[in-house]
Amino acid sequence: MSVPKGNCLIAQSGGPTAVINASVAGVVEEAKKHPAITGIYAALNGIRGVLLEEIFDLGKEPKSNITGLHRTPAAALGSCRYKIKDLKTSRADYERILEVFKAHNIHYFFYAGGNDSMDTADKTATLAADTGYELVAIGIPKTIDNDLAYTDHCPGYGSVAKYVATVAMEAGRDTEALYTTDTCTVLEVMGRNAGWIAAATGLASRCEEDAPHLIYLPEAVFSIEKFVADVKAVQAKLGRAFIVVGEGLKDKDGNYVTTQTGEFSKDSFGHVQLGGVAEMLKNIVEQQAGFKCRYIKLGTCQRNAMHFASATDASEAAMCGRAAVRAAMDGVAGKMITLLRQKGTKGYKCTTGLADLAEVANGEKKVPAEYINKDGNFITEAFRQYAGPLIRGQVEIEIADDGLPVYVRLEKHMLKKKTAAYKLK
Figure 1 (tube, one colour):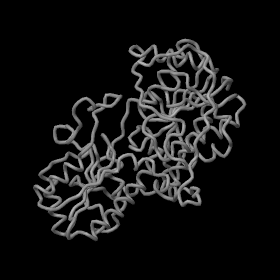
Figure 2 (cartoon, rainbow, N blue to C red):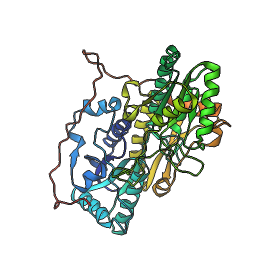
Figure 3 (cartoon, rainbow, N blue to C red):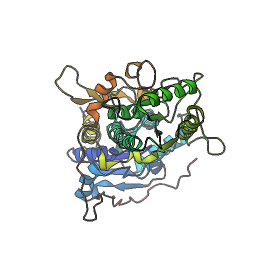
Figure 4 (cartoon, rainbow, N blue to C red):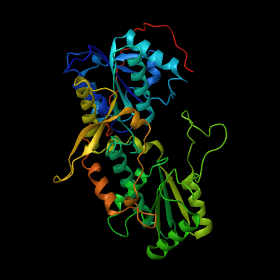
């Protein structure tokens, strides 16, 4: 099958992860094997960099830098949360993307991100087709939230799952040691609408005494009255309670238990800004349950913890990058790479598949009911079987003489701009 000959462009979007750079490394390493791809470029700060024509040449990076991406956290290309809406509302932005692509002979677009990124890639490809420009757009899944549809799991999730489970295990021992003074602990983790990250902490609980003792997910209706009763029951049994909560807990009416208000109450995508649920529950424990309580909020630390990243996760992230290039060389377009768990095989095995960009953009995968216990406050064995294999192994990172990790920083050889300046909306 004939494929266009030209340059490819890689971009990253949304919240960074421990392994999104491994996907970039996979793309670069595979793209170099195919003559149809004549140059390998990257956008600085995602689609925003395309619009501003801030593009650099990955082909000029030292080989050690590309190899080092396999064990470097966050988004080495730079990320963004720039929202492009539909073709009617934001047509100028999409036309600008194509203008920049044409100026630099870019015929392959590999976009690593979540739902909004897949939507941008899909609409860019649609406009390209409508205007007769040959463009192959392939999405590479990325999100610690693990909520992309049509894929068994998402690169980035295994590493954050490994990290938060370990944090719960270690902080739980702290609570156990000081339970006579610090009786309860509430750990807040990320997860707006899906509780995959919170659920992962349950992997740390190997026996009844192990933390966490209670886990609350956005998928299960949250009741303050039941929460207080749950805490009292665990306290009566163990003398302490370690509680994990997802940031997006909702009540019976579907409202977030806690949201930010005021000028900065929404992000650039129009999503309500969440936060503060752990502090709120800490106050409830002290006021209504009568126990001293402290809270922990991990913030962005949980999504960039390369020092404890899952080897399985990093390997699969790179596999998705390689698969994206191979799909493009096979004449595939308008798809996102997916991860497929092989059933009926001995042990855990995973391969890649494909899903339509448009369908992924409009989908959301939440924690299914069979992964949540009947009381809505813990995980089931089925979830352990699902998530357990994803956290296995540990990425081997280089440690400097000072005892700290060595991470690469790209040189970013910028291309000369060929188009007129563009003002972002």
